[in-house]
Amino acid sequence: MHKQTTHHHIHTVDSLLKKNQLSVTAGRKKILQLFLDQPGALSHGDIEKSAGEKFDRVTVYRTLQTFVDKGIIHTIPTADNSVRYALCKDDCSEGHHHDHHIHFVCNHCHQTFCLDDVVTPAIKLPRGYSADQVEVVVEGICRNCS
Amino acid sequence: MHKQTTHHHIHTVDSLLKKNQLSVTAGRKKILQLFLDQPGALSHGDIEKSAGEKFDRVTVYRTLQTFVDKGIIHTIPTADNSVRYALCKDDCSEGHHHDHHIHFVCNHCHQTFCLDDVVTPAIKLPRGYSADQVEVVVEGICRNCS
DNA sequence: AATAGTTTTGCAACACTGTTGCTTTTTCTT
DNA sequence: AAGAAAAAGCAACAGTGTTGCAAAACTATT
Image 1 (cartoon, rainbow over the protein chains, first blue to last red):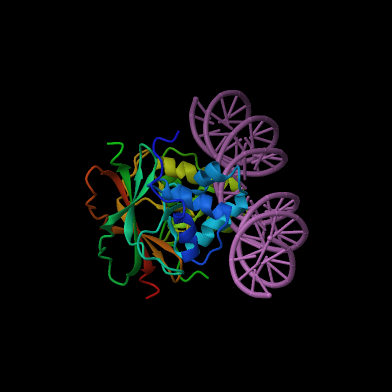
Image 2: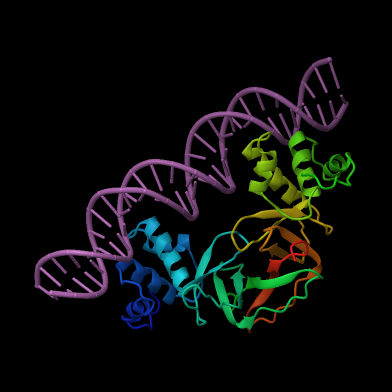
């Protein structure tokens, strides 16, 4: 199953948790490692499949919420209405996310990616409307599948 | 509650259903009228509140699905992961939607609008990615609330 | 290293959302 | 008006997410 080993040190997860003032527990380490081990986004279901045999569903929900609150991961809106999460690569902090990139959903491998280098475009709105935030989700074929 | 009456004739709903080869039933008439009576988008919950005392939950679900299949309404992706529906204004037909406009969610009145005149922008993707569809959801303050 | 205090986890129960199969009612056709 | 076809209603179920509380784990302190 493992085609390649992770390049992250064994202590990366621990220090990342400590940096965010979170106590280091087996569940948080496992879930955070899942995000570090792959490039895309994960749904609650994905995580439960990978870690759910060892951890309770409720723990997974609460851990994901904690990570979002701390600015470690962010949610991704998808067309099929399933919540997905990905690591924040910008300098997000507690309560302040700055993830102004677009998201890409591959119609072939069904993975979701953050395209960190693609900035959300400016949208010219009709008179009377003002924008606070713009969410862009692109569907298509990703680099690996094309 | 009614600040203004609807401008649609009493027969509009019936003929719209017939045009789409749907049998005219009380449930379909009621739900379709709800969409015609207001400018924004409706969630399943909205519809159930307005029509749910007269109609079964399952009927509402099946009616909405039928309308989507026929190209009468389309789904709107939202950040808070609740499915919303709005009338198709483009020339959508059975199985072929052409709703290439952006969607706007008001942070004040929490209504969702289709901005039919705002075309989805072209997105320059990194090498290797190709786009089939682009979904844009803008959050902000709508015309009525500003 | 042991302990006390705090945080997190697991469990049980629940609420909400959406689905499926089947029977009854309504609609359409003639 | 009657028969055939379609839709609605009902019941049961599955999936998803939440809450309260007791048990377990972690952290800080001695």
